[in-house]
Image 1 (cartoon, protein in one colour):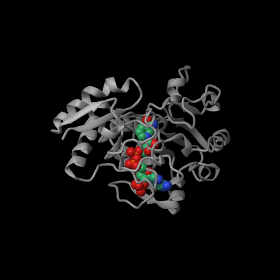
Image 2 (cartoon, helix red, strand yellow):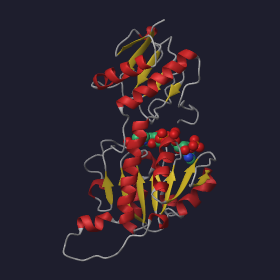
Image 3 (cartoon, helix red, strand yellow):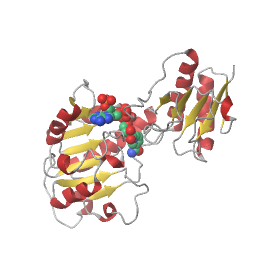
Image 4 (spheres, helix red, strand yellow):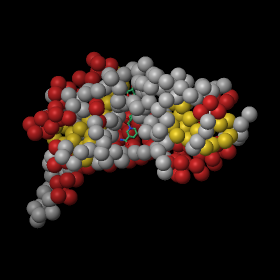
Length: 310
Ligand code: NAP
């Protein structure tokens, strides 16, 4: 039987995905019909971006799974009309992009690059930066992206602590978990990287109380999600010197409004949600593998836990 696959994403994405997805589905040996439009009751799988026009899954009466193109699922996970398995995106290309962005921004602050980039003023500043082994970095969120970034940072010699919901062992990383572990994870963090999903349990996880637990002058790097941070508390901590700098890629409102104080703050670097993105070629392989699994009766990869919200 031909497998009917609906591609549901914003216009423009179909043109970029059609070729790579077709190649990957063929490579997986599947008999398929891939289109951006189908009568809902004929659809077996939806390749899905949460900002697509499909918001009611009710009419998709024969649906077997929704395969999210994004790593973050907060805009679809609470949709009551979705009753079939939901898989999120774990994509080698997306992971590699995040490793590069996080490593670059950690190194910027670790080496104090701004001193020399902004200070071409004839002064001979001779302060040598410490080695990575003397720079404790904490990553909140030790999932696909957090662990990959931890591996890259430990390979450079950084002393990495990772924090997650459940207990885990990660080579060369000091791991902590749960509410009890958070304070210890923050206490040593000269550089703090947020790679948590946006869920009710992680909203405002960085607030006045937890920011105060960081060493004075710590740097906050957030490529996770905007709601992880209480913006007002962060601005207060920046102004007091409790936080030395914040490099922020994600925001409660995106695009970040032009009058938001983050834009003008001298201790904030704004990047426009470009830390990483799903890459068509590698993501298509993941989608094709999941459809192959679905058809073979094997467990889907990267299933979302709807009760946890990620
Ligand atoms: P993931 O594999 O699901 O990992 C999430 C991690 O967060 C896990 O370690 C999980 O703990 C931990 N976590 C979740 N809730 C927690 C809680 N209440 N307390 C403590 N730890 C908690 O996700 P991922 O693929 O690494 O992606 C992480 C996030 O990055 C995504 O959700 C997305 O928001 C963001 N992202 C941003 C960009 C960008 O361009 N800026 C691109 C891609 C992704 P357990 O391991 O115990 O489950």
